[in-house]
Length: 425
Image 1: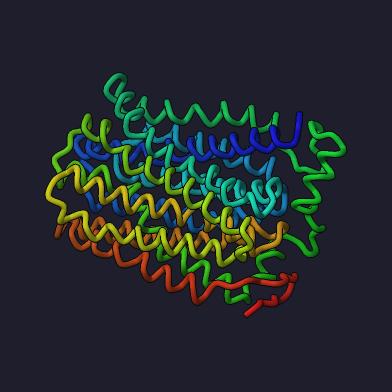
Image 2 (image 1 turned 90 degrees about the vertical axis):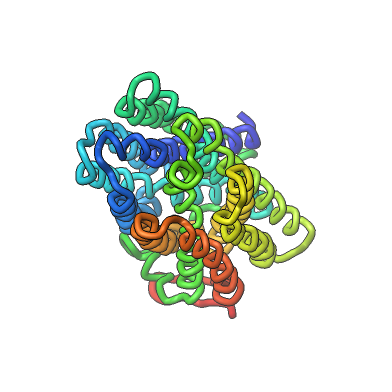
């Protein structure tokens, strides 16, 4: 098999893992109106459950990144997918808020491995000038999973009941695992590559340097770099916007705009589709700027700031005169998040070396999870008491703060050592 074909086959599997990840994750939010009646869930219960998910996700991301850097992408990714598929299936046995919280915690602990593993796989197989688009394709699976979840979960629920809907999405992970173990390996040892193609990809991305130090050495090496903390803060401010639309948009459409479960199945997927368009646009734009001589960090930041400004469209949603207008403003915000998201992972790959990339993605991902956990919990309290107005104002302002942090607090790290860092100011 030729190098180009193998690259796209691997990228296709990374895309599908992210689709499945979000199908399993999004099923609960689609079913929330049904579970309110069947299990007696309140908005505060749901906010607490999503906070448990996000807190577990926060803890797991750093550990997942270190595991990936330690034992390799191929094996660790398989473990994570099996774990989250079993956890998603367990949701079918929920009896109330407590059991749902336990199952969501288990789901978060395993789903956290998807992004550090996928980002590292992309960095190992794609050169910098093609990495923005590759990261966009991999990451766009999240939006497609969110697009497919409302109609698929609604259909399974209407036909077989909500418990079968949880089990139906979970089966897909086991099918994916068979293909992953067949296809993926590191460039240095992939048996499907000719010697010439193997030399070509290693010339573009380089071999993974030998690790010095034991488990967690990469984290110890980067912990003192200001850029690492700047990236963490940036993700903490921006990512809650996406989590809000993932966890709360179906409920907003139901409570504030009068949508039925059938209506959510018909229309609730549209904002998530625009995320994919934003990711493709963001990835292609930053790669285009790099190809024309712009510096990699500057190119990524330009596109991300444009996306951040579009994310602030959440300010317009509550005052929209019609449900269609409200969804249109949400689509502007989710398109902007897509532009942002496609480049945040490429920015990691531009800054951090391959041997510590998964750890870096996991560490900064803690920021996005902490922000998401706090915001989803607070949103549940606010929605029960005052509705959605203040919540949408908040998710309109957070992206602007994220842009300021990105511009002024993120720069290039020249070298990461086992103890200490050097940072280019």
